[in-house]
Length: 114
Image 1 (cartoon, rainbow, N blue to C red):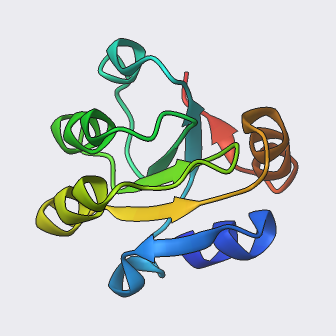
Image 2 (image 1 turned 60 degrees about the horizontal axis):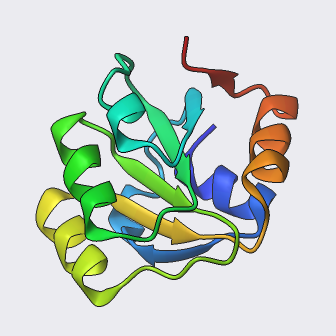
């Protein structure tokens, strides 16, 4: 599965990162607590969060996360978009809940980060 596939499956809108659409997504982690995100050790995963704050992108950069998906109709701030560009992180927005988004991805074979 790729970032492009995730966007199509969830109906999410890409805010930044068209050049990353073919990057693989093998796992997912859903959290609004960035302290939990910093504990994750995995590659090729999407961070699903309802937290629309620049700290999300800073945390993603520190944790080497290449794709952040905002849920619950949260909108990326201009600062988030700027930071995502600087860090090379794909950023998207979805109207779906975190639960629904996670379920769609799990059903499609994306596994949770353990």
